[in-house]
Length: 190
Image (tube, helix red, strand yellow):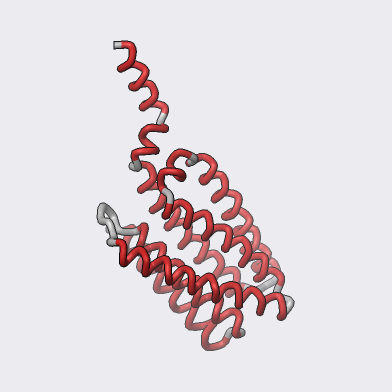
């Protein structure tokens, strides 16, 4: 019960932050925040439903939303570069890599299950780099940017947890598990 409430509160805070950027941020910040909100909600739709599967139409809709949001993110990145906002531009590049990693895991759970350590390591590296940017914004005294980036970091980490929970029960993950190999070898002996 607590986890869904936590996620709802997190999304509410991110919606509020997006409103702040729409109201008082630059065009790039408004576009950036809005696109990330769409991305987050599309991933949550595909990964956050416990024990329920979404239909192919809903999955296609979620993926179309991600494609539209990705286009908006390219525009926001170009805006950041034009505004000499290099921390924002680097942040965008790291987040795009996170989304690519998530998208592979959502679309190809078998590959993600077989290569789980690689995906975990990749996610750890990317999230650590983004955490360093949170500290850089705080060090520069850009508190709202640091707070916003930290919220996004937490939000996408929850999506990762959704994905890893689903991957753990994927047939490829069960076959790749060491205990499965032991049981298979034992069955061959008998």
